[in-house]
Length: 261
Image (tube, rainbow, N blue to C red; front, side, top):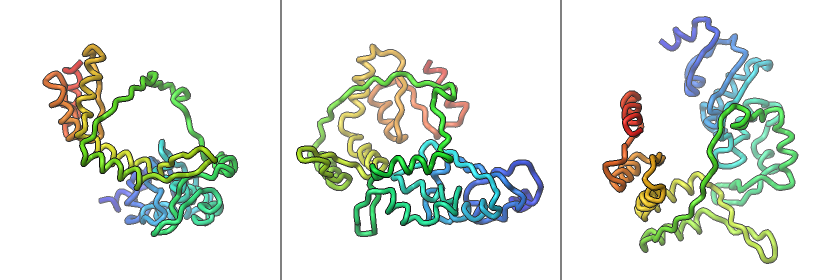
């Protein structure tokens, strides 16, 4: 069925990335728009290689990447995306890393730490034809001011040990001066994921309930990453909390949201 659809002439073809590697794309396409382009960051992935080949069959093709987070784990994540856009400019991953990135040698090769401070200006200039980002102000959206609150959690001994291990496994001490040391987190996304697991049972839900009480029990929206944590938060708060997860069909989510209001 997909082959039959792709054989028809159309103004737009909307496909997933996997299809680029498994189906014959129409040859007359001259414009490609890759939504959530950070899914093409892995230079060894079949779908990334397929996007590179298919979209550059014609050297005059127009290729666009759309992403709010092009650097998923490190600056090296943008190399493959740039390689798809300009394969004649971004020719070598290792040259790119050596030129622009601070690295540490690990058991599986160099580990990307950050952009070289001395090369930030040059990298920004190189990427200027590509980086066409817009701010919330540009697109007419706004966010309320952030209200920062620090809540200390008392970790049980087992979780304290897990947390202490994180400090060793996910951080590197970098001497930036005679009397100053800075701690660099090499993988923020992975670290946050583990921290959520470590702190899940350590007073987080009690802290949420305390915030609601401090807010004089005014209507409050609580966003949690995991569905089981959302269910645990609901139990901690009580019957006044309405649980809405992605398991529910759209109309039911809407019904519960309206009921809560």
